[in-house]
Length: 97
Image 1 (cartoon, rainbow, N blue to C red):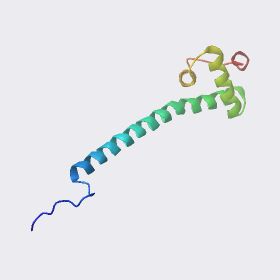
Image 2 (tube, rainbow, N blue to C red; image 1 turned 90 degrees about the horizontal axis):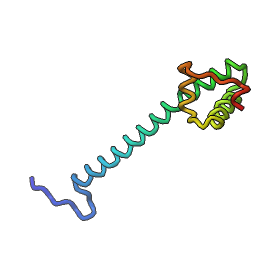
Image 3 (cartoon, rainbow, N blue to C red; image 1 turned 180 degrees about the vertical axis):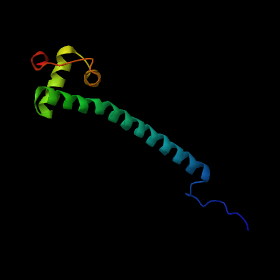
Image 4 (spheres, helix red, strand yellow; image 1 turned 180 degrees about the horizontal axis):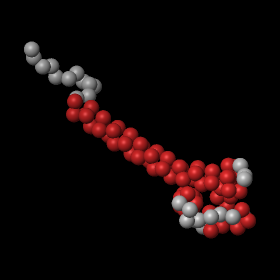
C-alpha cells in the first residue's frame, strides 16, 4: 500500500493539531474566566440573602443596599460581599444610603 500526498487544500496532520491546540487553549481560558466570574458572584448572592434576611427586605433592595455601601465607601462589591459572608462587616440600612 502506497501513501498518497495530501491533495491541495487538505490540511496536514501538523496543522490540524496546531489548530486543535489553539482551540483548546482558547476554551481553557474561557473556562477559567467563567469559573472566576462564578466564584466572584457566589459571595455577592450570599450577601444579598444575608442583607435581605437581616433587614427584612427583598433581594433587589438588598443588592441596592450593597451597591450603595460600596459606592459610598469606594470598595469593590465582591470584597464587601465576602466580608459580609465572613461576618467581618455589617451594613446598616441607614449608613449605606
